[in-house]
Length: 159
Ligand SMILES: [Zn+2]
Image (tube, protein in one colour):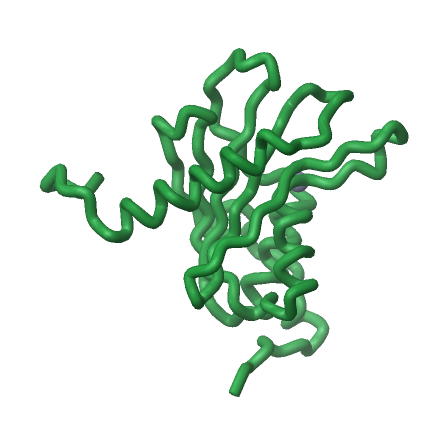
């Protein structure tokens, strides 16, 4: 909510993005950790692509919600169009109301998306209820990151 208490367009869109992440969380394949995470990515045209964690009996092959969502965005040819990402996670038994932030690997992948998009990606981390939302930039979560620019790769430009 803004200072005035009025629900702004920005607030409404953020609430919608967090709700999409929470909804994706319900599809998590997480029988091992019993910890579900959902992510929702908003693209420049306003469309939303979601992901949820996708665990595997081998454990080590498990994929995080943020990684799944960004890989889906890329599969749609939209990797340069990422504007913001919301992440929601929590124990599947409903206990706990903590903020979940992206793991180290996902921070690296968000950094890849940001550098390829050539724009700052807003990262919103919400509690399962959506009562509390923390906002980050990738430069906060992964300072001095190694990325595409270090290998001479420039942002994807669309005409
Ligand atoms: Zn992760």
